[in-house]
Image (tube, rainbow, N blue to C red; front, top):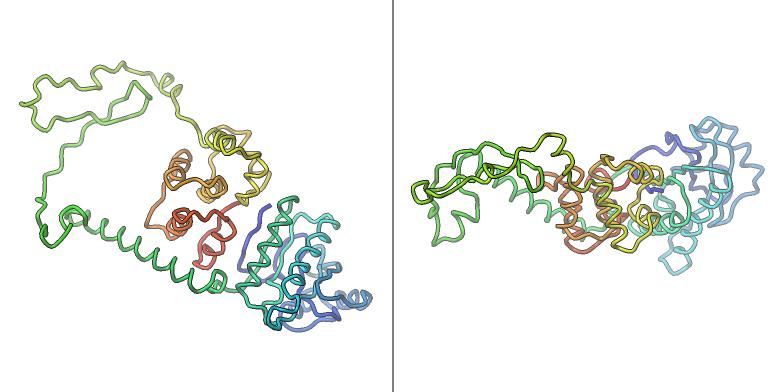
Length: 370
């Protein structure tokens, strides 16, 4: 684990094995096949001559020669003829047999092209969906890092309808965030306060901001909070400030009242969901070694993408996701396309990390997992 979608030239991938979308002769051709043969050198062709070709869906291995990988795994994808001639099963077999062969060779990392999505005419969105499903199924029971390498970030990866919906969702949240920021910069009321409707236009007076209160410690949780300032001191003559009643805490005492850490919260959430650690980190598209670090270090500081991957794996609500982010020192922002796209899927109850990553990739964003 995990599965990564990357924009790269597969011949430059520094992995244990790359997969070649070959033809049945294994003697080279156009597209990815030709590029791999050119980069590997004539030795690759010489070895391929002795393999006796390869049938659709099968996989055979050679050395990597001049490539930055140990092995090249050659597989033959189906030609698309409409989808009723076994193309789907043959394409799944390409991924399944290539991964099984990579495991047999002792590979820990493998890079695939999007098989059959070029000259063989397989619809790209369907080719991507099949690749994700086949690789994801394999990774449920195996530990391996798998890359899907593509050259562009066209919206075909997620479908035009979903792409338009997410784009509109992003635009709406961007517009809302920018209006709020502009209103604050101009010292104007935010939309929804003064401008709730035509009958209330400009009805909210510009109030003088209240004085900023100095920070004081709270005895209850050892955190810092502001003093409460009475609006009319003459009307609240008996007011006693909360901080005056709170005992003074030493730094050592304050540190003893630290809230639950990200690691502690995550492990508790996993137990509450009735999941095993393995189920959780695989569903989150997280590497086993990274999860081990999180489990063994109560103060581990994860990346934002890692936190959100776990939130998706645990199928947390948006409020629960925000709480988990806060434990790691993060927050969701409508100034970030990455944040808005993840929020879009959580709000709709879609918790497939690979589907979310397809959308993030299409919008040129970082992916969930690690």
